[in-house]
Image (cartoon, rainbow, N blue to C red):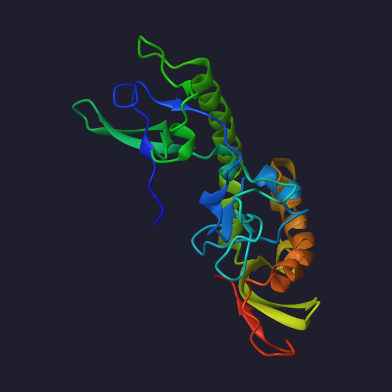
Length: 252
């Protein structure tokens, strides 16, 4: 069962250390991973890009169709040329904290670094401390905070356009037919962007999306669908009918 991150605390985690590890076993069961808009063109060279969450237009890398991430090998090594930032950041993440400010009970939202406490990165004898002897963040933790803060700002810059994309109705569930080594197969449950619907939107909308990277993301998304065959041919994908003709492999 996945472990929920906890907010980093200078008292609770005063003596915590961290070491970089090339171990992605934690991602072996992840079949979709969220991406930032600016990540999509690079990720699209390796993975199909879909819009997995029906509540928003966040892009996701599709990493497997049979309940297994096909890009993590038996030794926990990452085998694809592209590594999504969410996995690169592990075991760190950002958490949004809600606080009541003053007598007027005005709610404030602040970002804080969170960690997966039982990650092996925090249990190495030669790790680097996150806090110094005075409880102040070390250079390592300051770097992590800066990098993830920059990533959040990239997300915030494109959030409004992603909300607009979701409201257009251009994101629709489709069944894609794909030619693979086993014949022609179909992938169902894919939430993708309808090209005709997107390109018929007003010029002012497309112009705005061109400026903030969302339009580039969409073109990369359409091009990325050629990678579905790689996922379908993996042994972890349910094969269905013996000849593969007309079968449907659902996105999990």
